[in-house]
Length: 142
Image (tube, rainbow, N blue to C red; front, side, top):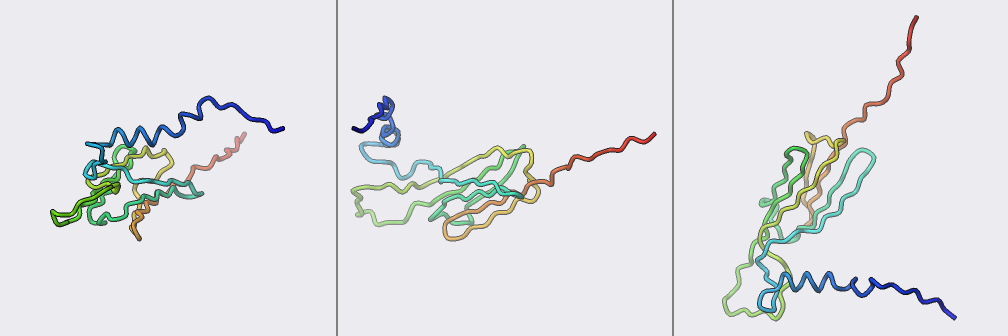
């Protein structure tokens, strides 16, 4: 005999993608000219934070990375491809247009030394950590 666990919320797990498609749909088709957000992986290493942003098809010249008041901002644009007017799509899922992502930086971030590079459709942003102020023992003399 096997145990079957009842998960009342499991029916909702598949709804998020369906709802997203409905919200983004126009006339039964997803609009390829709406704004989009690239996927981002963020990892923390001993001496830095590393953000990897998927931006395939985005000209690196259109990407802007900036910081203001502790917020890292990434902006860019994926241009619409020039195509003959007689081209007709049965499905179109690759988003086009402007994108923007913002991330609150931790206090340990060294914003003056942030670097960014682009390779094979992945933007990598390295945010070094400031050296920690080590606790210091102060000797009391008498």
